[in-house]
Length: 233
Ligand code: ADE
Image 1 (cartoon, rainbow, N blue to C red):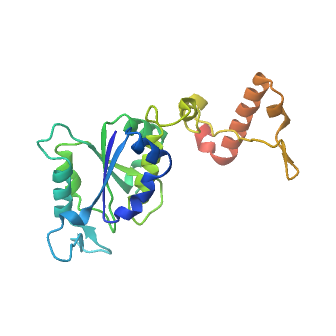
Image 2: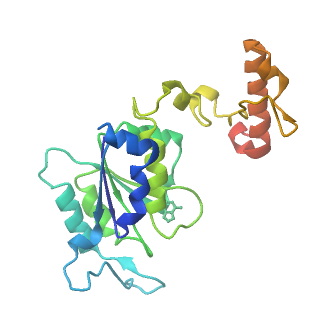
Image 3: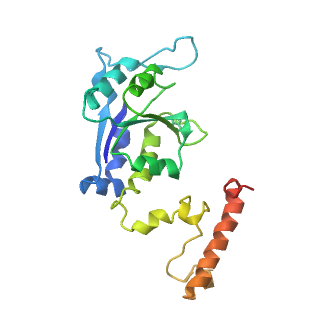
């Protein structure tokens, strides 16, 4: 998979190079290029924003640097086009199934907005030749799209075949269809007693049927307590 990220804070994306995604980059399974939007400004101050037409608070990102960035990274007459992902609280809600959708794409281009967002014509312009996806992490407002890109990319990268060491673990996560949309049961490791706290006995029993039943019951209990919406309650 190829990934391009356009931002005015390239250093914010440094964590992409560590951990699981960093290893995937080293192994050549994922290519990631982070671009500074100011590369495509045209004035000495390298301006990227201006006041909104119609008034209102804050600043809006200028269309021209974004237009140039898109044309440079994904030329209109190029052999293929990326899917443009723009994190925004006004986007569709991110989820495991959206992560699965994105993991199937050969090329993702993330556009990080700051301030009150990007001039809306940029997405219309991009939409003339690429799929444009505005995605929200949830119902809260971040200062910009950078943290959302880190979260989205981490969720996507671990679904790419060969990126996760244990192929089964991705399909058994909370929210993956394999566990029927239930939250995962709690997990324990050694020692069996730690600071007076014991691992549930059934997990030490070696009885696979009882263990599976216990995990299922814990999943339902947790889901009912924490996320009743997932049970349709
Ligand atoms: N940018 C600002 N807030 C955001 C959110 N909730 N999700 C994604 N991108 C954002």
